[in-house]
Structure formats: C-alpha cells, structure tokens
Length: 135
Image 1: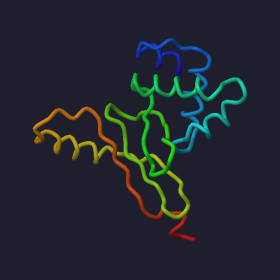
Image 2: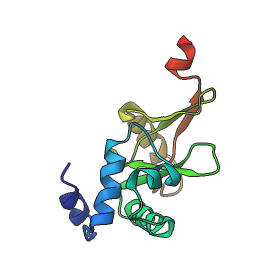
Image 3: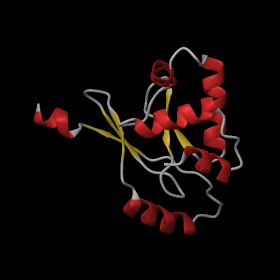
Image 4: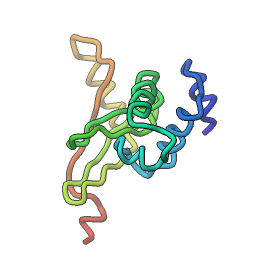
C-alpha cells in the first residue's frame, strides 16, 4: 500500500506520524486498541497525538473504529467502501476482521427498505474462535 497516496486521495497531509499509524494498522493481524498502537509506534508519539490521528483517519475513511465489547475501541484499516464486520472470541478475547462481501450485499438490500438514510453500520459477531474450538 502506498500510504502517502492513500492519505492524499482522502485530502489528508501525509505526515510521518500519520504514515506510521497507517503502516502499523496495515501490518496488524487484527484490530488494535490505542494502547496496542502506542506500544508499536514507540516513544515518538504521545497518547493525545495518537487519538487525534485515529480520529482523523476514521473521519476521512482510511480506518474504522469499532467496539469489540471492551472498554477501549479498536481500530483497523477500512476495507471496501462500507467497511467490514468483526468477530470477537468470548474465550480468548481475540478480535479479527472478517471478509464481509456477502454481508455487505445483504445489508445493502436491507437498508434500501428503511425509511431513513443509513450512513454507517457496525457489525460484530461474538462466539468461540477456531483456535479455541480446537483446544
């Protein structure tokens, strides 16, 4: 992913700290909490700066913020024009991004019949992950 291009396409200046956050999100195996992000970006960024960057990335559509049933939100890169769903394991607590193409088509059809304009949707599944089922 060309991070500078992604940010500039969204009208956001590609500062070194913004690029770093996007790269960490891109390399992550799943959605991250702000604390997990801070641990990965190192000492060059404080919590306030990180939260401002995350708010900006969500606002411009580069990242998504979702509630995994914890106290902290989790962040990941946006996939597709309308985002994607997540799964959180009730045993190990791991949250993972899901390929949501079929779900998006169904949700798109569903919202066509609502008497309002839906601009965002958050879908989160909970249960037992494949690793915990095998244990």
